[in-house]
Length: 150
Image (cartoon, rainbow, N blue to C red):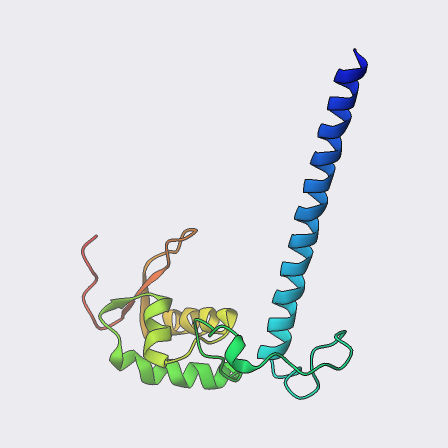
């Protein structure tokens, strides 16, 4: 190995190290911004500023991108169950959890909604048309409606 080849390899390694450090720093900054956003959306940081920023004022709400779904207060499993019972009339003969959320007007806790739908299947109010699999959602149908041809 010549001195020139050695120096060239060393410069390349230093450049790769610098690029790696920049990537790690950028990832860290993105994670901190995401954490700050979550803090603000929960309302904790709205009055007091963000933690760790030396008491600086919080980022104005206009600077925060709109969330894809509105933030709603957490509902109890009983409330969700009652809401789903009322929403059943608005649903088509076969539907998915996304249809239920649309009829409810909010997205309840995933586990609570799953238990509610399972309970309704066990009680005979609903039937399970097809099980969910990965990205394919489960399909439910009203017990009184004719099964969909599949």
